[in-house]
Length: 87
Image (tube, rainbow, N blue to C red):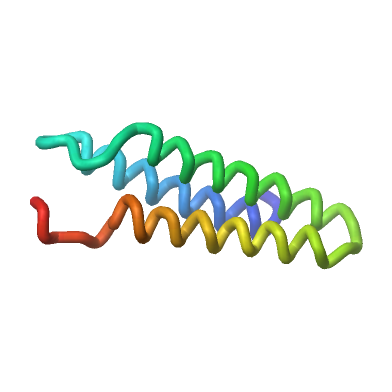
């Protein structure tokens, strides 16, 4: 837990865990593979960001931030964490 990428991806992953545990009660709305994609997105974002912190190039940071935003968009669109219409 040394870089901003570590902190941000762990926070997103913790939220993903809470969402999974909440949704695992009752009728199944999501599939496990959807959470796997989001988890892999967090892991790769963290890896790219940490590698960019070691180097001097901005390309790694752009890639890590872009993938992080794409992961958040995937969670928002596919998993719909704030959708209260289907309780």
